[in-house]
Length: 93
Image (cartoon, rainbow, N blue to C red; front, side, top):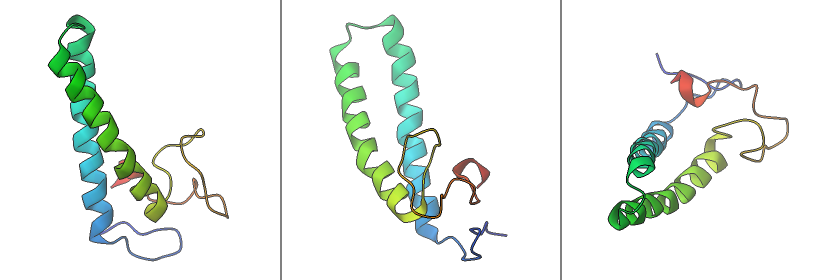
């Protein structure tokens, strides 16, 4: 069964596709961050990290414009009424 928003509208396939793209980029960023902690002079890895960080920005912006915030605590704007209490949250799908 697919999760539904609080208003009862089913989430479309694009939700899952965008969320997966963000998760893939986030995973790579975390791994690169860990690697760069011990290899800070690896220029190619720093460049890759920066490319992925730039790639993430429009993905997150697009997701949040369509489906609401990915994180709370001021990481995204909210429409009215306040969206954060609405389910499902990205980690629930």
